[in-house]
Image (tube, rainbow, N blue to C red; front, side, top):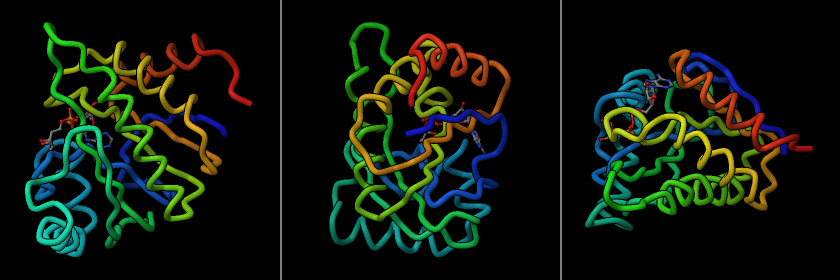
Length: 174
Ligand code: AR6
């Protein structure tokens, strides 16, 4: 698997699946979640409502992932995952790793070969970006998957730099 980095907007990525940093309600929010629903249009929310009514009446648990259509986005699917809220007193890194593992498992189920991830949990959920980058890169590299390219799409320069450093620290992928 190849891991690539892009500084930009995840809603513009021409990949099979984009990962959404959602919340348990699956009913939208701000940040990357808001951008995906805005650009993707109402069919994504309609799918999310159906998932709530059928598989997740109590919401999608933290660390898990589930797919919907991608509406008007260039991608074919959106994989919604719920990152943990950062806590300085409790180690929740396993849940953040799980978001990445589970998203790739769902991608495999879909047959997605290219998957774009945002910097899950580093916005509203407050995770320090350097630490989140290390956890995300490690989790993706350790996952056994048929996905050929994982593209981290970082909105700002600080996140882009942090993920670049985490990737270099982890060594070559192929
Ligand atoms: N493309 C790529 N990255 C983006 C984009 C974009 N269009 N927009 C923001 N980011 P956040 P979280 C970056 O807050 O911390 C939502 O309300 C942003 O700069 O979107 O997991 C959900 O509904 C940051 O680096 O997600 C949840 O309630 C990163 O995406 C909650 O926020 C993640 O920031 C989830 O919080």
